[in-house]
Image 1 (cartoon, rainbow, N blue to C red):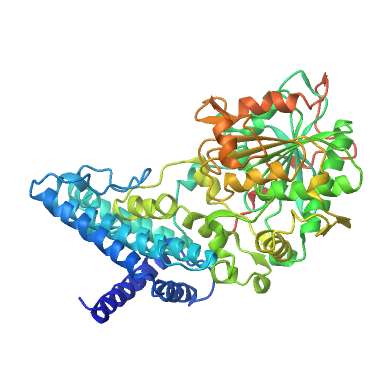
Image 2 (tube, rainbow, N blue to C red):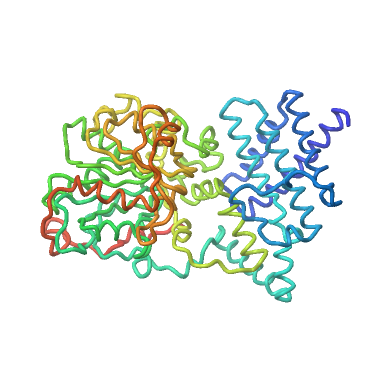
Length: 575
């Protein structure tokens, strides 16, 4: 085939792929922003980048590998011994059914898809673009490939077909009903959302709201032991998600675990911002959020010092607050625990593909007054599209199954919105300019910020498969903040953190040698079976002071009970 014909075939393929993917992603993945032509712009950019010249050797090798795989596949069908067939990647559950391998037609469809996917991926990987465009190309290429999987279509999914036969078509009727319900909601149902009610069977740890302002409610949890550590714990969750990921059900609640360990526990419940709150800034989250909470915690507990636990962007806010306190010579914080937290944003992971033109995928935040939590949730779902988008499409619409109750997915379907001013500051100064690690570059709450002056001992927990805060990026804190104990957990951003001691699953790494990079740290680290929770508890206990009598009631006369936990802020949902 000459170059002109090859180019024509390639462009026809890209056009068909673009058209079908646009339909699928708009129907099942949801529009990622309010602009009608946003996906068109992304598809056009993808197609243009895909046409950029590659070296002849790279092109020929990609085509040669594809032809070789095809030859091996057809030889296998004829009973000729070949090398190992193309297989799905580790963790890919789309083709687990025996029908995908035993039925020659569906085996052909599967193998052809996997081989073509590999060819397209290699073509994208060899595009030789600048790093930002290269990451974007590879990411969206993977989105196209995932969207066009034969498992996503009834006619090419043997499991869905067999299910329809077995149920005499009822599964198709149920699937249509599920699709209609989701279209009315404007999003995919990942779990049975009727199975959970906040305060009744999720977020049930006993406690009360004792303070609130425009930005947050502060919850104090009731003690579970006769004596408690002198220094209380303040939990600062991410403000882009609801706090109850840390207080799901009794068996997997980190909040309950901390209380049961003999701690007086306080927690910030952030506001679900409205356009009228667009003015709330990063400074507000530090001063009226973390620093105000510390003030109330000290007043209620009569302790001069507090241990902090923070997660994700809550950790980045906490790091800012610690730097403010350091500048003010204030040693209120006895220790700080950071869960999957970025302080150095040089390499923020897969989310970087959205940062050069965030309005395209997240909407016009300045015009809206908020970063819509639904748009952000869609972005995070795209980072794991097979698990969080397409598996639900297949199970719910093609197979007609109702989503099962799952507390983490219920939480994942309950996003929050961020004020425009805060979001813009966070995007610009952290992700785009990486200013937080630059000494005296930022002024927060009237103080020049230098993370290197933080003196509180810090516990950094990262997870090895984290796609939102990659562990090799969070590890940079060991070179920025003076006193850091770094721990690496198994699994990802959420499952690696919510790894309850009651099950004691997975593993974690500790005591690697710092100062010589991430690979050396992991090579020298000790691999410990079980959850990191059991490693953290004695670490924080050493910094919690002596034992004192547990408080007889929550709050005090200056900070009386306002309402029972989990409070009203967390119950505000985005329609």
